[in-house]
Image 1: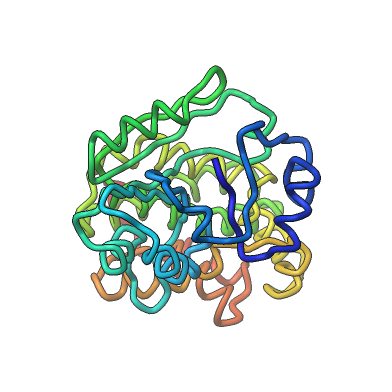
Image 2 (image 1 turned 30 degrees about the vertical axis):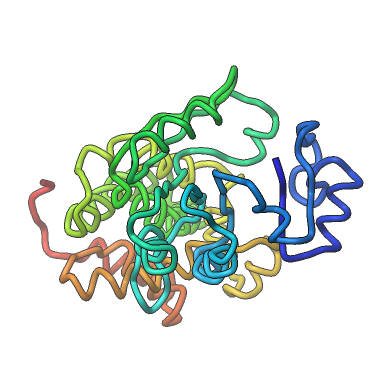
Length: 305
């Protein structure tokens, strides 16, 4: 196995430490993992490639690896989120950059890296456009403490991974303001409705959102402080600005950009997503959380289904 990244200094440090001492200091690299500074060297003779970058860096990364792919190359990613301003999901970006016929897959579901690194029992979903690729990945990644389930619903898995980050910011704000357990579970449940509504409109399977990549990832991200998006919401509730919270967290908070992308896609499709819309207003229009709650609670009464 080979590991490549853009930061050569950080790669050298990881090679020396035998782990990612900045983010996962307790998770030792396997003996057969080798850090390399050349992308060409990293991909030479490799069939399966895993890309782990934020959504805004996916197109650039896929474009960089494209010259080194062969007809046998298969690509998967752990990227979550719509591409900003185009509204494209990761598999759509990959089809444009790598071609629609290439086997591709997305890894998603309720997995905090820290707990995976500690080898705590974990389950996730692999959705692919090729059944053989999905099965091969599941077999390669699964072990005593890690179980991968397969799916062919790439749209549903990717929509779940994008929208849950937005909702987790809202859940963090709710808890940070002391709104209590009733408010938190209402946000999670009605947020799941919004996620499903958008996904189905884009062609996803409704049942995907009741699984690991939907409800599972949503509940995890909304309720545990290992979630960067939840911590963003907690920081906003304490009076910090988005930039102050981002500086404090020191990692990409995907839900901030996802909120803008989700708003654009929902408006284009005419999909009603009131919770996500209010979170967008707080992040980008200066709305106060209490004002957003008032707007949600004052909406016209409707049927739950």
